[in-house]
Image (cartoon, rainbow, N blue to C red):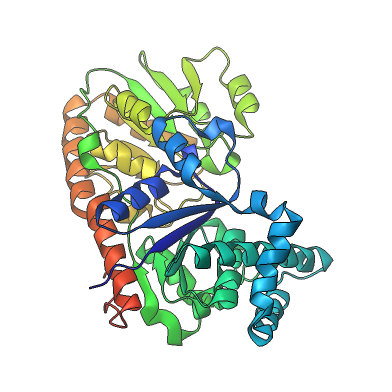
Length: 404
């Protein structure tokens, strides 16, 4: 079966917080796909924390940078104006799918300008299929670029925040026009089905985000070391964790990896507590910290299926997290970790206390988590599913069923 040449587009690539996309690209390349990476914005230096990010950054097409050249912009759109009917249909699509209000219209016209440059780049490089991650603004650009140049597109939808504003992001129209849609969980797929026409449901496939299990060692479970990895923003629930830790007995210590808008406030809340804020770290550095972690905790209010939980479980670390969205499809309560209600500091603290006081339980849950990740969240297996989707749809023999 022919392997189509792919382009991957996100709003900002590579980012320290989106290493799962980098792993997916690397796994597809290992399977024989040629993958061109594209980013709307140029990644900030704070995200280039390791050699993987720096290497990907060098080879990535930066769409906004290209649009800053008036000559480049005019040349690209002049190319598509040679087919005026297609060009103005795409422009009409940009206008019709814009969010309400003047601001929404202006933004979609900007996305249309970006789409013309992106489409020109894809055509020049012989790309045969465009894939987007996240399904927000960059997916609008992907949809419009596809309408301009005729290269089919698909996207991976994660949630949960896009499902808070599905009409704003027109996920119904994006799903209708896509060759297929990748959903990261059954929960995610069901949410998309709420807003998309039933005629398109059979093109919604589940492909998990994944990790490389062999990258991670097995934690020792000989202390009371807690770890949180994630963006320091309200949605991650860190204030609830800090509140829960005030009543936690014993000589524990929490390490926080990540950065974000709430860092200063969180550091102030944690003042005087045994909490270390390390900022962003590379994949290898996170793996090293996990090898010396006893319990991983993620008290989020809203998630898709967090890749950081997969990384912790691959390291044999039991996890304490919240019973939300697609998380129960990864973490089985009492088997590979503990699930607690979101926003409940008392139950979060009780779950942490129980795990920290029982090393045998930690080891048992850690082994169970490793098995789950190897079976259902291995990036090599999931990339092979994705490759079958790309190849099947390109060759007009799409796989059947929600799990390709």
